[in-house]
Image (cartoon, rainbow, N blue to C red; front, side, top):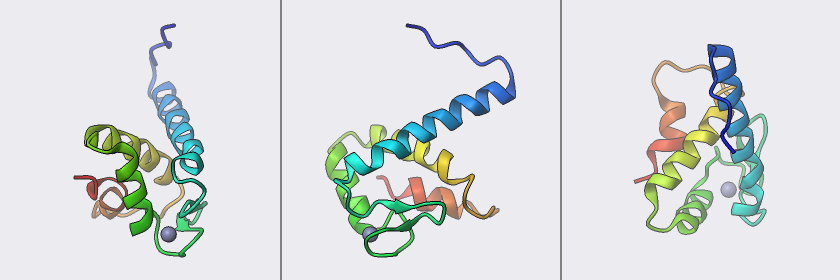
Length: 103
Ligand SMILES: [Zn+2]
């Protein structure tokens, strides 16, 4: 089935928001319920560090194995959800926190 192509900025934003929500919904399963984010603070529910904490990064990296592009795309979707909750920064630190650690 083909998804409808967004024709307005608002529709495109809604598509991105839904993609981010699906990514967030999958986190509990991908992390086996450990080191999952507490929202809307995006703090780890297990160790209270900024999420993704080091154990969450390790677990996500293990889940994706060599598929670093897949992991980066997934974390980009999570970032799209998180950016609505977190304070605005001009430095790109939120992007770095959520996506740049994937290498
Ligand atoms: Zn943690």
